[in-house]
Length: 153
Image (cartoon, rainbow, N blue to C red):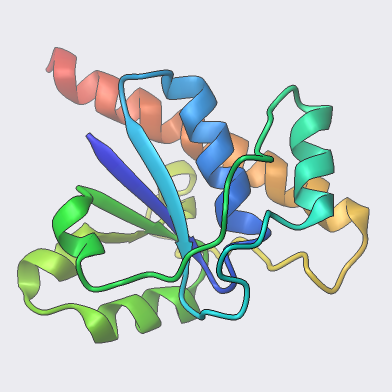
């Protein structure tokens, strides 16, 4: 399975989601992340994302920002987006219904059907990054439980 995490700039939320799922899934799932804009291509995650990851025993320092591209629909089975704006931006790039079916709000894994957003912590303080970490931790746990349950029938 191949999973892509997407947020606006690929420096705050999606790198955390990427790191959390990659750590939990080990080698059973390939995980990457991208942004819907290209403002930070090649940059490391935000220092506050790196700090909250380190606080939770994760190292996301080797990640580099990249922009979402149409071929990501071909390269990934699931494209988790962090909020409604990302969802709409990615759907605009979808070529067909198959592409559209891959795009999902990540918080629907934890709270199905509620269409909750993972708030962008960029303009907030450190507390926002802690909150985002907790939300993504819960969502990735729920996702891994769901796919395990699907495998066992």
